Length: 159
Image 1: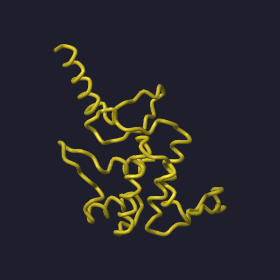
Image 2: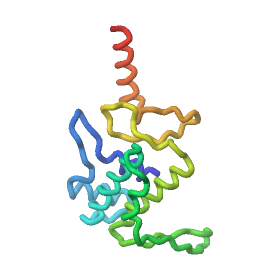
Image 3: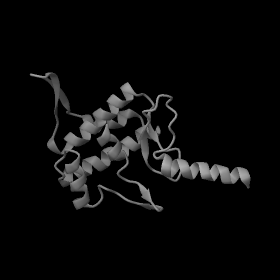
């Protein structure tokens, strides 16, 4: 789930300027390798495409059917190991990390429905996974976005 959130949050706004962790080939290669990928150009292109689809699906702008082309030809094959049953993913090497992220999204939606969502701060592009008991988290960071929103509302009330 960490890679899922990291991919969604790999294109933040910093001081009003977009940063893209996958935009520069060297930085993208580093990001992919840190998350279990190879970092080749085909993999980075697939990750960027997956990130855009994920963003739209999580925001509700697209249907999960948008993942169809990415998952075409992907197979999960059961494998018995000494630890029990494990599922192996059969996909082209450049698509493996992106497919794993989509599978993590599907697992998250099944186990924690509605808890993966965009930050409530309109000036923020980040996403959060609400693990709170009450399912009421609104901001990606209470210290940054939450504080800004609360300060903004306080200012408006006292004005």
